[in-house]
Image (cartoon, rainbow, N blue to C red; front, side, top):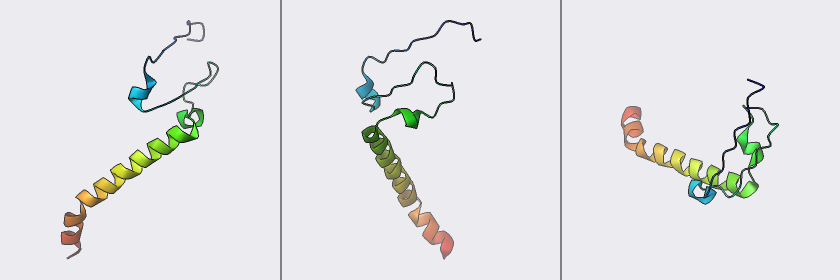
Length: 70
């Protein structure tokens, strides 16, 4: 596996993924934490989206939780 040629992946329009930039060095391990390679702005966008989804999930269960507590 170490002697296999490097695979290069190019994303033509990274903004479609909502990521302005993601730089992973060739020598990085396969299991590198991609958050360490993202800029602060992109990390903030991901965090905001994730928190919005968590809040929506909690809100969608509100009626069930209130019924369960009663």
